[in-house]
Image (cartoon, rainbow, N blue to C red; front, side, top):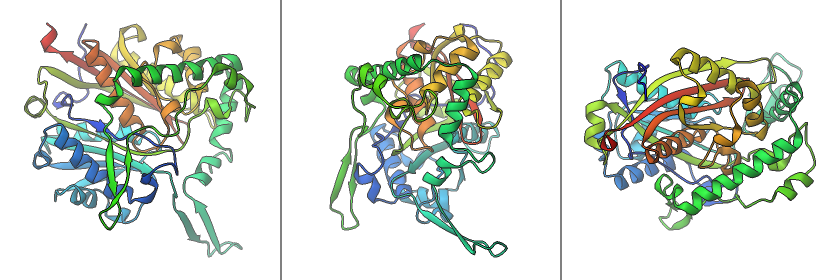
Length: 403
């Protein structure tokens, strides 16, 4: 494997120090009942404990969330306190690109020499998302209420269209076939359940127990609740909500968190249970495509990234994406020529859900774990976000123990 120069040469992701909750569908689990920021901080502390990483090693926290939660004003410092650490931090959000952007910001902190160990923590709760009331003193409607999740899903203020309409418009632009979209969705479910049955998901997803304010058990988060096996026949029978989009060929809202560390090379060797594994961030790319054509943006981001890196899809060992619509994957093949069957070998958000903030963080964790199983290689992570944005990042996994 030819090694390319890294975007952040000093930054490393220590193998095996990561973890994610399961992503239960909205309103199906005890996660709907808790402060998601507090839960995420406590869950990160639990995951680090299981990975034998002391929270005292953390110097800084980058958190990413997109849905308002109680006391969000305090952001990263509050979340750090919930894990028992009084350290500074930074909060960011960019819709579904948040989970990958948080990793990039963590790497930039390391590259700048500001810190040696940065915790990246992303989370969101779509269940019971808040309604904001905005004063409109210059309009005839004196107050305006917005349901944070559902109104934003249903209306892009820049275009006046819903996100679902973007999938339909893009499907028509690329003359995507409905049967192929059904085939993609069915294949993605089969990939997820193969990964689940093999035990792969047990290595990256962590069961977490929740307590109520009185300290009594509230529930256990130990499955991607809401995900069920689906037949190709049932997909074929579903009514189109827009061109090539049905209930079965789009993702669903869910709740969850995901976390990983970004460190210097020396700290990665110290904290990882397998210090011979070296994980670098090679490059990243972002694009914004034409209005209401969000599903095509990730393909353009990938093209730009690979061109800059001097690589092709044939050089990629693992490719995994955030695909809220199966249309995304059909369009990716149309644009790049890369077979959609080669993507997402261990599952994807189309199947296990869409809590926004942590979605691409979980994608990244699963992709890196898969690459380690393969003995290393280039890892491509990409996805779309509201506003017709595409984001892509390229990692390199090298396993010194296999040479």
